[in-house]
Length: 94
Image 1 (cartoon, rainbow, N blue to C red):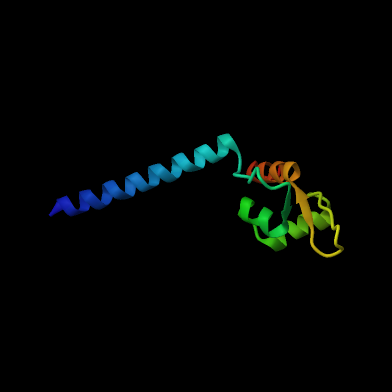
Image 2: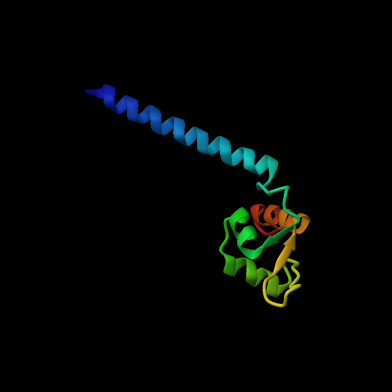
């Protein structure tokens, strides 16, 4: 009866190993930023960083993330700034 447990255990081990490898690769290569876009919305930056849109807006208002409001309402963040912000968050906001 240990054979089914061995199968489940090996599946779980494989999944955990894949997740660890994926996390390590993200740390080495930085967050995935879409190189085709020049400007990002708050929602885009939130999706890339895994943070909420409100969290990103709070960082904009506090000056931790540079953003422009060309239309007067929506914030836009350039690609380089979004990438640096995502790496900064990943490093623990140091």
